[in-house]
Image (tube, rainbow, N blue to C red):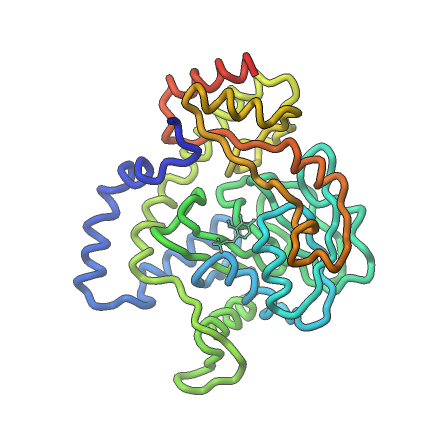
Length: 339
Ligand SMILES: Cc1ncc(COP(=O)(O)O)c(C=O)c1O
């Protein structure tokens, strides 16, 4: 079966750079912080044209801690696109705020900026699947959930902070959970660093209610090796995406600056299409089957987003990554021809 992502193949590609260094970390006895981790933070920030970054324990923590660092708290109303991985909403709920779901565009599955209500206290944007677009012009804090955006060419987000997931399947993925908060503002990153370290301003001086949320030093070699190859890997994904698009009758319009975290298409008969792929040895996945606004956790809010709902009925992701061989890509293209 051709996998949607092939993490063992990705590791094999980078193993020469990673394995000896992981062993060095194990033998060093230094498992927290250190210069390599500082380099990871700098380089992740650099991917978005930002100066400051701090590693945290997951992308979900990155969202929660960034919201807190931006001053978002209980009762505040946060605009968020109806279509994303549910963690985006979870973070809002965890800080005691209220999600205000904004429906998405019909051409690309991104928040319809014209629908953002005027009375919100903050906005979270989500460059889903690595797709970029115009940014909201609002007077309230903006957080970019950049979990799927690494490697994009859309430049520096105007958002006050970006939250990154380093979950293993991400284009730059840890060997385990991880995340980062990135910002042009050193103060935001400092606040996240303190919140992720039990709210300490100095050893054993707890000035705010924090938690334990750090990126482990052992992840540094894993991430640095993948950062070194990020540009070429994204280019390969873009080239494969272009092959698929040339075959499809109605591909979702892609911008050359998009990162292609997942290649998604719409299929009106998704179940049949996925069965056809599976029969011919190709994996696929549904991202996402339900808009966040329709999940049981937030059902009592009663918000409806019909455009997101329509996307959720047809979206399907197919393999599009640098570890596919030329013949595997040809095989997938031939299946798209007969889709
Ligand atoms: C858009 C989006 N936001 C947030 C997250 C949460 O990240 P993590 O799984 O690292 O907590 C993910 C991860 O899949 C994601 O895709």
